[in-house]
Length: 290
Image 1 (spheres, helix red, strand yellow):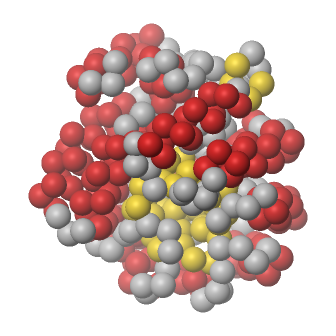
Image 2 (cartoon, one colour):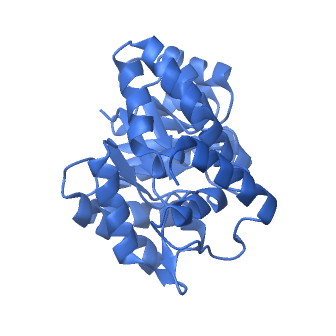
């Protein structure tokens, strides 16, 4: 259902508020450059520091600007199940195509707790749901066994896998079958994951290199592995640079260098420090982005 290169889009700020014009312009540019879908309000979109009103507005605006030209998968996860249900219901009401639901963070649920969390959301909201496993941020790792149980629920259609563990990703693909889409949550692992059956990526790097990321994913989906490998190795230094500091610090700095949004984040995130900024600028220059 959801395959290809999806951008985990940043939320631009200006003077402390969401810069709606910059966000709209970014979405238009992404679509023009071949991105297959937009994912607002994920980790890269600083969802953790958006108010509920801002969160709802960013999703609604994304749907308005996208105008059904590409799918919108809205980040609606929370560590409180009732809150995730509310966010997901709102996202459905404004016309998203699916919701992306991060594993609950901080409270460290058991595997049974994870299953019941997602089952409750799936029962409450009739919308395609994509799981999101990112133990580096949420502390809890959703196992392939739990993912396989959840994949049997009709409207749970896929997972963004950001465990960094290709063996685990392979186990998920083997356990869940063709109906269930596995997308990479680690840019550098997109091609390896697709080689074992993954169907694309929800990408940070696509914020600054949408056409190149989409080209790599498209080539892999077509089985043109030589072209996909060339694109992978061209993108690799840029993808690595996106994580010189905590995401989305580098990608916002990169977009600012490109003149596409202000280099503004919300505390406790701060702008990129000078050493990594110099490294980032060098990579961006070598790639031809600035």
